[in-house]
Image (cartoon, rainbow, N blue to C red; front, side):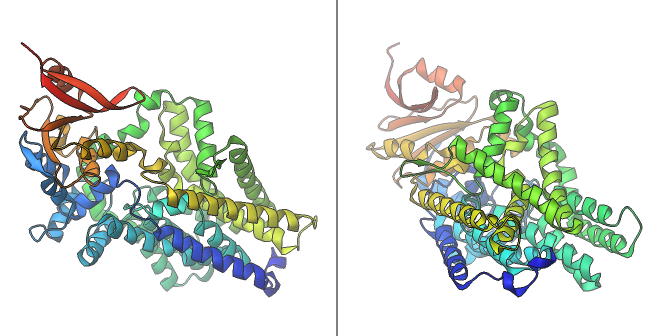
Length: 543
C-alpha cells in the first residue's frame, strides 16, 4: 500500500471540486423538505419521552373513554413547564432498550428550538454532518492517503441510507458518528499507545454505548481485532485496550443496571425481531438473501426517480458485487492491520444477526438499522477500492477508467435517490408502519365534525405498546386538523358513541369492531392488503 501514500494521490482539481460539490449537496439533502414525510410512531415516542411522558402516562390520561381534543393529544409531544429533566430521565429509564445520550441532547435542543417536526429532525440532521470528519479521520488512520477519505465522505454525503437516518428523530445518525469515532480512536491508540489516546477511545466507546445497545457488537469486533493483531499475547496494547474497554463499561454501568432490572420488559419490546409468527414466519432463506442484497444496495441506490427503478434486481446485484469486490481488493492490497479491522467490524455485526435468523428464525438481519456497523465497513472498503483504481497506480491500467465510471455511477445513483426521497410526499420505507397516515388524515379532515375512535391493548397500562396503538394515534395527530377530536379506550372496553359526530374507527381490535358492527352500520373507507385501517360509523341498527 506504500505507493498510495504519496501526495500525488490527492485528487486533481476537477475531482476536488466535484467532491466539494457533492458534500454541499449532501448537506442540502439532509435538510430539504425535512418535515414532509410522516412523523412516524417511533419518532412520536422520541418526542413523548424527551417531553417527560411514558406510554403509561398517555394511556392513563387520554385512553379513558372520554372525548379529548387534538390539543390534549399533542400535549404529549411538547415540552411543558410541569415536566422537567427528571421526568425525561424517568421516561427513558422506563425504556432502557434506548440509552439516553441522544434523547437528552434532543431535549436540550428542543428547549431552544421547539418540538415541531422540523426542529426535532434538524438535530439528528446536524449530528449526521459529524460523520464526514469522523469518516475522514478513520480512513486516514487506515490508509494515510487523502483520496480514500474524500471518496468515503462523498459516498456518505449522497448515501440514501445516511440521508434517511439523518432526517429521522431517532438516535441512528449519532450512532453512526460514534461508531466511526471509536474505530478511528482505537487505531490511533494502538498506533501511539499513549494514555490520552486510550482515554479518547474509552470516551468514544462509552458514548456509543450510551447511544445504542448494539454497540456491544462493535466492542466485540474491536476486541477480536486487538486479540488477533496481538496474536493472543499479553502485550501493553492488549492491556491498555482492556483497561479502556473496562472504563467504558464502568461508565455505562448505571444503564446496564437499569437494563438488568427491566430485562423482562426489554425482551418483550424487542421480541418482534425474533418472532416466529406473522411476517417473520414467512421469511424464507431466499427472502432473507434478497433483503440482505436490497439493504446493501440502499447504501448507494434507493427508490424510483422519474421511472428509473433504483431498486431493480440488476442494480442490487451490481452493488452487492461491488461490495464483494471491495472486500476482496482490501485483503489483497492492504496490510493485515487494515483489512482485519474492516473484516472484524463487518463480520461480527453481520454474523450476530444472520446466524440467529438462520438457526432459530426471525428477521434481525433484515432490519437496516441493526446492520449499520456492517454497512459502514462496506462503505470504507468501497472507498478504498475506488481510490486505488482511480489513482492509476495499480495494474491493469484500465482499472483507472473502471474506477472513475464506478465512482460516478454510485454518486449519480446516490444523487438521484436523494432527489427522489426529497420529493417524496408522505413516507419512505423506514416509516412504513405509518405509511397510510396521509391518506387516512385526508379522509378524516374532510368530515364536518370528526371523532376518531381507537383502542390500545391492555399491555399499555404496563408501559408496553405491543400493537403500537398509542404511537399510531400520536403519529396520526400530526396530520389531523385542530378541530379533530378523539375517543380513546383500552381493550376490551367499547366506548359509548356520542351523537352529532362524524365517527371514524382507527384500526380497531377485532372485538371492538365486532361489537360495534352489531350496533351500527360500519363502512370501511380505507383498506390496504386486507387490513381495514379506517372505517366510518353510520347510523345505529334497528333493534
